[in-house]
Image (cartoon, rainbow, N blue to C red; front, side):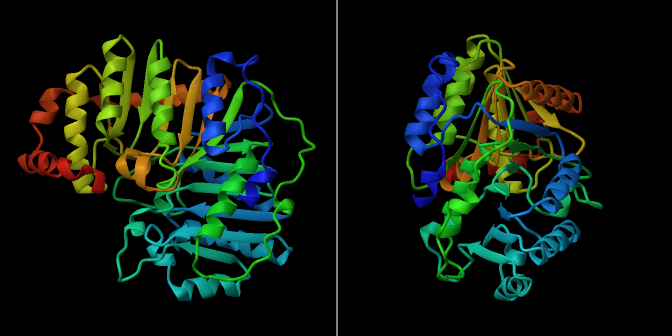
Length: 407
């Protein structure tokens, strides 16, 4: 809670954005997530565009770098990042790296932690894998957040591993993802979220100087006041289902279309009904998902949900060139979310997640164009496509759908 006192109060929205002031009010009261009218956002439609920009901003850091990612894999891309981090440490920049104990299993050893410490990089592992299982082991840190000097931040679907940037070859031929870069005061929310998780992570347990003011610099630069941004987060312990409620809100307010990309589709009855209801009242609801699995059982269960959605008027597009990992939710060219949140039980109810709500900013046009271009690389799913699936896929999907909240 100490970190949140440095986060600004929410911008006034009742006058300037009355049509969305109720959502802004909800996010501020439910999670202390203020709306910002003084921050810019840039969209990256693939990891290849994101990586050089990210590297340049890391190289420009003067005060501190915070990295929080579900997956960090010690491979070529991470080695390039690590070389920059080592250089910044030598220049006096404080570097903190936080990663999940299961997602980053190759980097979650005491040996690797000691290696980072030898480079004077502060690191923490959120809930390392242990031989004794407890229910909290199911609540992973799935966030993807980078903060540089408290002025620039990134979030999206990208982790720090080769496949996300299409380094070399991967089993999917091509990895499609997305991310955003935020400049301005909205970065303060991501700074607070990072420090909150840093304090929650207990490995290694060590006493630290918990003076946070230096991580929340005053902003001298003037940023675009067009539209608004609301960075937000969700976790298993708040019982408010913030991420899912944003989905409900966008679906209920849509007047023309809703476009969604997600790598997984395992949803509860309420969200399934909301998607179907939007389609039934004439909204063009389209959903882009992978045509190939990265987790076979999840893929099988997801197919049963896709069948139901297609039967009820939702347009489902199967991405053909490789694997789509992007997490986008847009509507009517006015509102969009980008972040770490998949449309599955784990993301919506079990994990620590984050996102960015964008309203009436020109960047939404770029997001919408990316979605439309992506559709050109897809095949629209039909009921015949489901019928032609291997029997084992349909059987496993039907059987394990009962256990969907655990998958």
